[in-house]
Length: 416
Image (cartoon, rainbow, N blue to C red):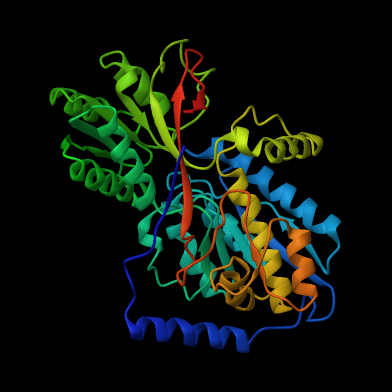
């Protein structure tokens, strides 16, 4: 496991920051009192726009499981706020489920939307969400584009930017002795952002990128991209994709050794039922997160609660479940600190309750942090996924990137 701290180098202009602050002030001034007020019980209604369908559907269950456990913990704590949820499907850029789901969630009166998983999908509806004064909080968006996006101060994420994952992936391949690589890349904000970060890191380590053909969401034939990368005779190949990996991998590894294949969070999945045994033996991958063994008690609780609610087992696929849990806990803490469930009011407290202001008392559970807030103090929540610690753009300033390796059964385990 590799753990890094980083800081943002890109900064908006003073004019843009002033505009953002003004927008937040206007929204705050219009805040209604529905949902409770300071000193009384609050009811926070959130919606989810997570992938129940589409090319990232394998991430939907662990993300929704994280949300479900957070709601259970918050409501059972009974610390002055209750959370209600309206479940929704983000889909992807191909099936565009969000086109009907986002209006439905907004019409239902949600004050925050947790999602999407895909950066490109979030970018497709972020204007609609923040334009309605609703806070958008993604547990899995990693595109650097979102750092300085004009989000009216209403967008946050618990996953670190791909500036971090790209750095780790590029250095990993160099450390593994590779000097010349090629990439097959999804042509969206996530794919191209991770490509650029990986290339910069690998080249800084002395390596060379020979080719990086792209494909578009919805494509089903990848023979041209596979032929292009293989023609360069690379030492290693990076696959930056979502569910398209199920089509690409068999065709690729029939001509290229799997142990020199590198995958990323968008396709780091359990393929035990998709491929013949041994298909992915030795392939490696990177993804935000922690070694499951270090948070096993939490993951067991998440699994047990998810199954108890009538869902199928997560089968050890926990990607972005902890980040989803932290997102909901932070929303509830921000609402409690603000005494309001309005989007702008919660946004105004999220950096504080994450420890980004540097003025809070450390705490590691909703109940513990809520007691600090209810006692008149400032809470600094350190989450399950990371310490979080938001900067002024709603990005976490610390994150963990886990390196994993595939075994003969086409499932992955953390590299020790």
